[in-house]
Amino acid sequence: MEARDLMELHIATQKASEGHKMGIGVVAKLNGTRITADWALVDRTSLLDIQDEAAAVRLALIKVTQLGWHRIKVINVNKHLIAMLKSGKGDNPNIVTLVEDILALANMFQMCFFEVGKNSNMSLCKSISRYALSIIIDGERIFVSS
Image (tube, rainbow, N blue to C red; front, top):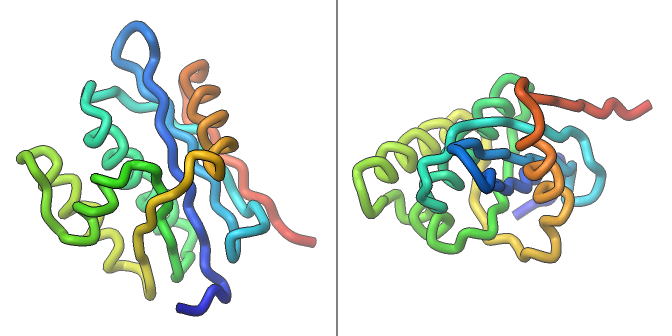
């Protein structure tokens, strides 16, 4: 698969120690190297890790559809979620709905696939997800090359 013009979305979540708040960190890298954008998003946790990760992937793909990017690789450390996205199947009704939503969004791109990430490569999006726990309104940064 060609890496040219491929936007990698590294996605991580963090739950608040109290309450039902979840922080989502997304880092977009062009061809896996240059950071093009990042997002700090706030959502409500379902208290199920896989459901929270799936909700984060869905939110990230929604953000990306608005930017007009065409070739996407979604990277998340949850192996079970990535396996479900690749198979198109979930293991409970809520996950099934999220998987269907994610795959419908994925079909809007010229190319979109899912990959398990290594924890060691996710430090920036994890930091952003922790930061997101301290904000009220979602944050977004788009970096324009000169």
